[in-house]
Image (cartoon, rainbow, N blue to C red; front, side):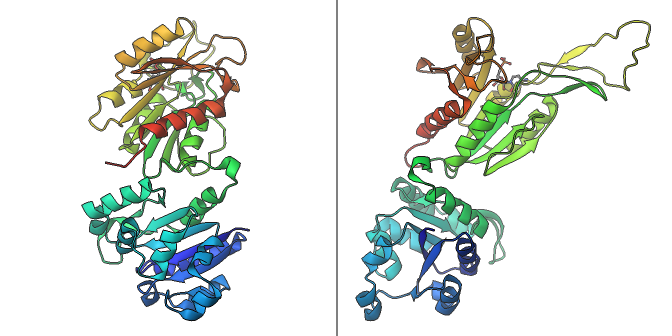
Length: 404
Ligand code: C5P
């Protein structure tokens, strides 16, 4: 059980705060609500009190509240402060450090993590002032969720809708995770595409060409990026691994399907292409090839598109493009050459011919070299989850600081 202080701002989406309270209560958390003057125009204190089964606080000047429950104590007793909906006005006041009402006083006085779920008209969300304010809040350590995209109460369309209560609740759970599992939410607002697994290239309707890729490394990277708050599109070849939490999985079989799925997922800030894409496919695939034919069949292969190289040349090229290189000899030399040939930012290279525990395909561990413009780093053999964790931290470092 955790204690959540929920600040309900003034916006038509305030009604969704009611559903959020229900979800948090059902998950076993205590919720205490603070309602701004604007918020009180959309939901009543009585509704919030009934759902939270607690007193609702509205005014800094309510002496009774101050006597029994000072505003400092309100935030002291919470594990997490959540602002939902976070209006443009409320966020601007948070940025300025204003403290003219109970909500902003609490936000200025708190030393607890703060999560803000914005909701506003699309043009307000895109206004340079709001863009600046969101960047400032994130730099100040506030986790600001990206609003949803879609139809708005005002009849317009675009980003600015309050994220669904279930998505806010999931973000809250991530922030409440035990300290050991705490992961900085430093990729919130970023979109990452990850490819993983092998591709299957049909020979006929029942046979295919494949490789030994298990998908484990790519899935682990997708999981780590999602844990840091990125929106992750995982384009996965045919593997049976479970989909990591918070990741959108698109299943494909062939290299052509993978190329199309990556294209459809653009634009993205980050692309990590881990998949072992088949270099060739069978030129023509007809009916099942019969064994009793006079001679063994001959397969004519043609080249598959190089998804990584295409992405490097695309006008929508993600600002951080990372390729993998599975090599069996002269691993570092080939990786350095591949980085410049494919015009990618980083190459993660591993020796797939090595002994168990190095980087052999399908294994649990990976010994990699990270090739960047600064040179080559050699990492010790690590479990694939740990390689993913370190790589995600390096990716997050690239995007650290105020957003453009
Ligand atoms: O040149 P090579 O196939 O070794 O390059 C490997 C890198 O390129 C990996 O990141 C892999 O995901 C990507 N790749 C691709 N499309 C292909 C072949 C490789 O995206 N057809």
